[in-house]
Each structure stands twice: as C-alpha cells, then as structure tokens.
Length: 473
Image (cartoon, rainbow, N blue to C red; front, top):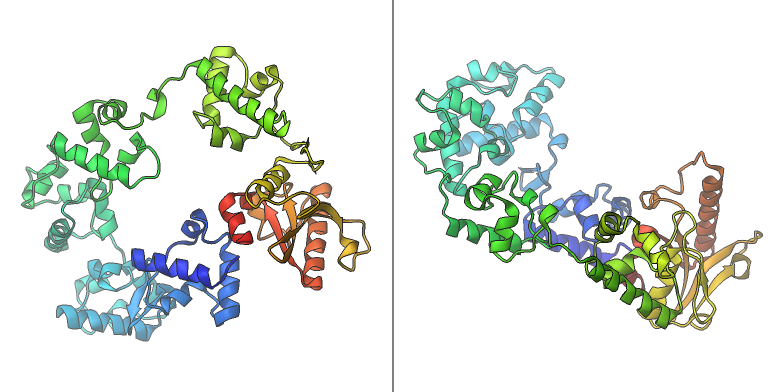
C-alpha cells in the first residue's frame, strides 16, 4: 500500500544516492509493488502526474536530468529558451561556446545528438544557433574528430585523476571516444595497447597490481554483495573493482581464489554434497511436517527455508545424477510429494481448514504462525458475498479476517500471473476459463469498493512475509 511512509523511504534513497531511484529498483527492494500505484497516489495527493517530478521538486535529479534555474528538468522538456540559457551558462563558466564534445550531462548540457535533432526539429540551423559559427558548430554527428584529439586527452587526464583509474571499457561512460580510436590516432605511433596509451598520458596502468591489493579489493567487493561473489562479478569491472584477467593472472581460476580466501565456492566447482546428506536433510523436513501438521506435501519454499543446502536445483541435479530420479520421484518413495502445477495443493489442517493451492496454504500458514490467528475464530473461509454485499451470485470470498479491530477481506489469486496485478481489470483473455475468472475478480473488487470494505487482492508476488506484514502491521 502506497502512503506517506512510502514517500519518506523513497526520499531517503534519494538522499543516500544523490538521485531518484529507478522504478524497477523500488519494486526489487519491495518499497512499491507497482509504479502505477505510486503515480496514482502522488497524482491524488499532490496533483503531480509524473511521480519523479514530486522528488525533482524536492531537489533530487533523475539520471540524465539537467539543472535549469535551480530546478532539475528532464531533457525532453527543454524549450529553445532553456537550451540557450544552458549554453550561456556554459559560456560564463568556461569562457567559450561549447563544442560537440562539451554537449553532455556532466557539463549540464543535453548530448549533441539530442541538441542537433532538437534544432533541426525547430527549423534552426547550427549556424543560427551559435553566435560565432565555425567548423565544429556545423558538425551534426557525435563521431570523434582528430581535430579535437588534444581536448579528448585533457578530458581523459582529468577523469583519470578524479577516478584514480579508467578501465578499457569505461570511456564511453564519460563521453570520450573508445580506446581503440584513441590508440589508433595517438600522435605517438609506438602506442599499440591501452596500457601503453595510459603510460603515454603519464599514468601507471594496473597491469601489475599486487596480490595483496587484489585481495583487499576482492574482500571489499564481497562485503558489498548480499550473496557469494562469483566469476561474473569480475567481468566488466567498475571503478574500485577487479577484472577477471587479474584474478586469472594471480590464481588461475576463480574457484582457486575463493578457496584460498575462505570464500564460498560457486559455479561448477561448488562444494560437493553427499547424496545421503541430501536425503537426510529432506527426510528430516518431511518428518517434522508430518509430526507437527500431519501433512505429506512439502513446498519448494519449505525446502529453501529449512533444508541445507537450500537450492532446490541442487537436489534435482544430484538425484538425477546419482539416483536416476527426480526430486518428486524421491519424495514419493518416502510417502511425500510436491505441489503439482495446475492442481495446486489440496491439504486439510488439523482443525479442518481446507486449502486448494500452495498459495492458500502459504497465506493460511502466515495467519496461523505469524499472526497467531485461529481458523473459524479469528478468520473464516469461503464466505458468501451475498452475506456482506449486495450480490445476487453465489460467489465466495476466500478469507474474512478479524484482526486488531479490523475486518479484512482477502482474495488469493493463483490463476493469473503476477505481472497481471495492475492490468487484470482491463485485460481480455482468449481462454474462456481465465476470462471468466478475471471477470468475476473484477466484479468482486467492485463489490468491495461499493460496500466500503477493507480488502486485498493478493497475487502470488504478494505472498511473502515482508509484504504481508505491511498489510497487517
């Protein structure tokens, strides 16, 4: 649910990173579940149609924004007067009109490609735009020019000093020609490699970085990850990171480095498991579930949460390689099974509550174990809509929950995909059964709204402890 606290959390991220975070990053860390809900909330509360504009007004930029008269603005909203103003600002700062390579975000100017298209769209020639047109002002593309090689080198040196080092593939990120072009057009024709080019510029390349320094960088990289470091993390290294070539030069292979430094070994060289250990881990989980819940179906989430190892694919791979059977086949040999695709999970709790899918099972388990609610006391199932709304159909509501003085109505959606969470109201399915299900779901939501009830339509992406805790707490 989007509320004032959501905006505070997003603003804290703006302060932390100095810019407005991307929508997919906010969804990934569960601050929002949908950009549409965020936009709708800000539109209703503040009359701002674009949610990023709310944070722009607070002084935070979106990546690529320009600072215009003290406020951040999207380049797509620039007017001709705005462009003239930014160019005049550049002239005042630097003492000359900007040339092609100066048109970039770091100079608070739009890129040259956008600028030339913008002028062309407004029927303005390049000569007309600049007070004193010369050769560079008439160039309409961003291809590097040998004429400006010295200026490229000045910019390279300033960035190199500022960042401490610039990798081979980082040049395009700082509006410079690529390394091959700089090497090919270097005045010193003995320069044939990137490291030689760096030395020609007066700097020392990182070709002979020491093992001690490499270890220091690796531990720092690992500390910033929420998972084991792997070979992929050394490809396309960013500033302050290590490249895969250095790892191979010092250790030969990534798994050798991981072993020597006491890091978890990943990939095909990961620690080998004993098949009996894997069987015991599953058997212990099954025994505990049978004893406590009298249930002979276990879920994938339970394997991930309670077994060691927690990766379901590990069991699948080992059982196939060593027992010539699947994980499901093995579980059947000990009297258990996994939820079936399509059929879901038919299970009856000890107190008589029946669930028809693993999603209902998860939600009911959350109510029982996390909120300490009791079936038929604190929550009831399959309640007729006609008992609490003006409904003429024989439709049932999945859950009616009494919690801390609130009456909460919940529908658990397992048939429609999670990505349909924000579009199910307007989607149309070719499948008659799905279309009927979708249509009934829309009708149910309208009945909730018309009756003024607190309700939640939970898709599978919502069935996690963090999201549910926001609803109930």
